[in-house]
Image (tube, rainbow, N blue to C red; front, side):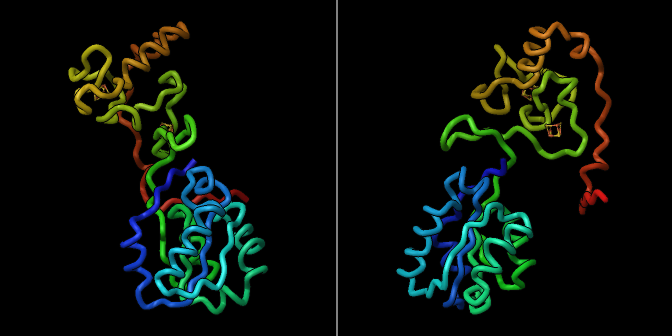
Length: 216
Ligand code: SF4
Ligand code: SF4
């Protein structure tokens, strides 16, 4: 899931300066689960905008904001006139969703959220970063624990000399050392041969931008 958080209201207000007619687009997927761009948050934002003297022409929460198909079905077709009359679209979705809205509407967009990371949900409002989308997954070799996101130095061979009692120096021993976790996991699974194996420097070419994937 893409983890987002709302920008400070003052920043949103500044970006909206000069736009009086606004349409709001949320996201029925990740941002709803993060409680940053679901129906409830969109309605609250509409009230804030009205207090700022803006004319809210409408709002919509597409099934997924980062998908052209849902944007067309849930936003463009049912709210064609309102979107057409809007001077700006306030987008309460991740950066990918905000760009999709900019592309399909051609309107100036105001991103209301900051995109933080790809993470897992532990419980409501508790998220943990677990993947940097490196393009070349090595979880098989590390017991299903990603060292690129969970080791403060992103080491491919660890632990480094900074671990003590299973904790990491880079966070003043507040978080677990990823490589101790990897060791424990592989040991439990009887796969310590993988831990002993030297992992060569990663091929970061898969990480170079821009990236596109089109399957035909
Ligand atoms: S190795 Fe880590 S960053 Fe790369 S794809 Fe796998 S989980 Fe994501
Ligand atoms: S202590 Fe562990 S998690 Fe921290 S930087 Fe060293 S290897 Fe990585």
